[in-house]
Image (cartoon, helix red, strand yellow):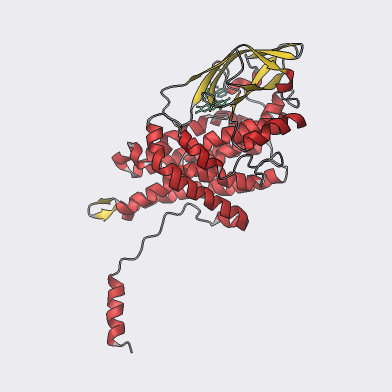
Length: 410
Ligand SMILES: Cc1cc2nc3c(=O)[nH]c(=O)nc-3n(C[C@H](O)[C@H](O)[C@H](O)COP(=O)(O)OP(=O)(O)OC[C@H]3O[C@@H](n4cnc5c(N)ncnc54)[C@H](O)[C@@H]3O)c2cc1C
């Protein structure tokens, strides 16, 4: 039989409100598939993003500005060259690379894009298509983030059709190449140090890659693209190349056709899947918290069935994307990743992201369109993730060709 004291304690406990569950976007505990060391790094990145990036990013986003103040503390995380072995790079498995990209995007998809362009696209191009000498020369300084890179493939008149023919030309004159043309949408370009520019050799009509030092190469100029509504923190540039002279030593020596460009995109496309999933996680976690705090009709909106329906659908999208990407990372680590594998995940994850962030925004009611509540940022950023590195249609055409054997691009 309970004593009087125990009864008092029991009735006190009954009055204590039960603590509400903390938002958790890793519902299946997928981080447990990482090693202890990898989990520690993910935790360190989360701490950086939450303590340094989250408090200031909405202001930068609203101002269309890049937070250069974050570069020195970001360097200390020593993430440069994730997924690349040797050359002073961080290395590690593709799965860990993916988790880190997801973690960056969970707080800010622009910040993950800045890093993805530098690490995946610019460093990845040199790693996959450069000579040994070029890798030795460029990768260590890029891994230390002393030199930041960008990747210039898209042109004002050639976007989805890049494989079908770039208009930017490269003409060899002795040991120098003359580049002419324009590149559009190039992330980091307005301020970074190095550009990987893809151009069509006028002699053999093949696409070749060139490393250009932005600040010292005559004929190279960049204008920032203004008035974006998504990924506003990323500075995108419109590059003009006018008789831009690049030494043969800066031509990527193992990049001899668009196939070699596509090898880089295969890796980075599914990284966009990871980033998109991080974007969903950020939107979802903000939505869960808001649903527990926001009262209507005297009750938290999270207690309404229709709001729970939105949250459950968001979590299902996130979990489906995470599971898909983990398998893809395993395929990549085993050297079995194909273009169609990457395309399926990029298309699927970014499409699910559009749904998830729209549901999150809906749950916030009017506050969902104000930057201060974070979810508006995830909502618009998802639009850019959906279209860059190949639109949804392009991804599905790659998959469609693999399914049927018929190319339906044109
Ligand atoms: C924020 C942002 C950052 C970016 N960063 C970079 C970067 O760093 N480097 C870089 O090189 N590029 C970058 N891009 C460019 C991006 O990859 C292109 O925007 C994308 O590939 C689509 O090209 P486009 O915008 O010219 O659209 P278009 O190719 O003009 O397409 C318009 C529409 O037509 C559809 N379409 C086109 N062809 C077909 C077809 N055959 N069948 C069916 N539908 C079709 C497309 O799916 C799309 O819906 C970036 C873009 C954005 C928005």
